[in-house]
Amino acid sequence: MERTIRSVPGMIVLLGISGVASAQFGTGSPVSSEPLVNGPAPVRDLAGVWTRIRPEGTFRSGATWTPDPPRLTAWGEERFATARDSNAGGFSLAETNDPVLTRCYPPGTPRVYFHPYPFEIVYSDTQTIMLYEYDHTIRRIFTDGREHPEDPVALWMGHSIGHWEDDTTFVVTTVGIDERTWMDRSGYQHSDQFKVTEVFRRIDLLNLEIDITLEDPIALAEPWVAETLYYRLAPLHWELSEISCSGDYLDFGAFENFLEDGEE
Image (cartoon, rainbow, N blue to C red; front, side, top):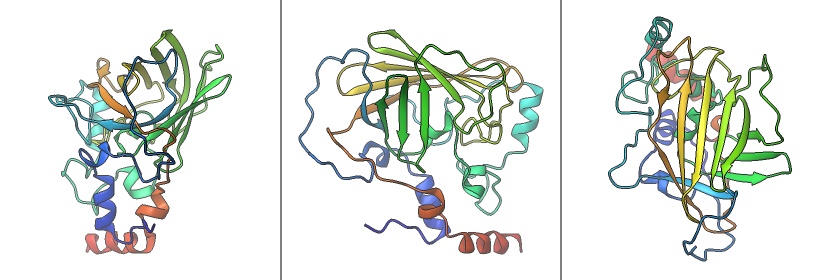
């Protein structure tokens, strides 16, 4: 199946997809299309392919975490003033400086959740591994009891450690997130003190909720507590496909010409 996008408008459409499209099960093909029957949550198990849904009456944005903006420090306000995001409609693609759109930088943690594609969770003896359909992104959450390093190497997805709080609640903290990433799609930026806490709650067999708290004493005047994210388990053996930023979104020659035309 041909999915390569050869125009900038096509890229905008893909990067801006939300709502209905995000409730589908990605671009892969299921080995078995047998419907799943709901039941109790398995014990200490998040394995499977998950896709985001929007239950009726819940908050959902394709650009940010809460209906109201976060409280920023003076440093945070200064950095936010430099952002020219196109996701909320404030700037055109020719004007934006969003690093995901202009450079195909990885979105980072937790912004990756805004991309409307599934992720899969698998396990090893020492790690919980999140495989995102978007841009071949792999995230390793260490579960072997280690602590965060005192001076972590900056990584796009950060350094993550996790533990089970009870049989259905998995808590993950992430630090060392590359400062070139944004906290959301609106342009809120962070320092090297940025910390993300995710609480994964397996509600039952088919449903997963994720609560996210963003903390940064340099950028945020108080913790930014995101509205709950809701996910649904895909049919058994669903296969993730691939969405490549540079391969599927951008034809760089056309993209550069578009930017040059916009500057005239």
